[in-house]
Image (cartoon, rainbow, N blue to C red; front, side, top):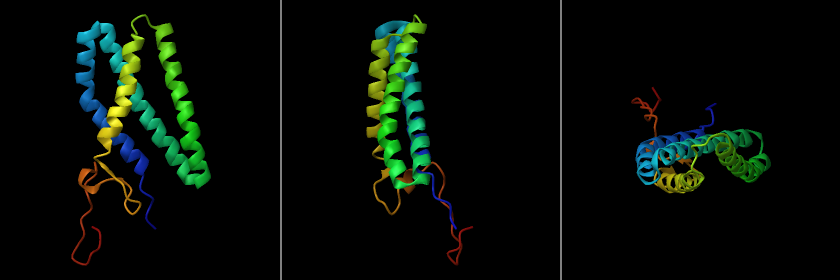
Length: 152
């Protein structure tokens, strides 16, 4: 029997890859506008956004293996918990480190989440028959089939 594809993981890794593409530009712009502290805060914001997407994928994958009710509970409850963790991380970073620019950090977190999710809309297959990344945008190469239709 074929293993269930890790749709959540592949989408989160694709989001992280896209975030790493734009992170240098985000850090550069924040540095030009708000100085070194702004650049560091923007870098922290992008890192927190990536961590949030990966945590989301991990939680949803775990919930999906349990039951539909668990998946729904993880999706709704996990969102609230992760938003609280992000707020706590912002407040903790502000309290512990003198260099954190909370305005830049907050704007970067918000813009990174929204921007990356809209960017990812182009890459996601929105059908239940083939969920996850569209085959033409997938990170892993497609498998080849032999003359008899058998996967090599």
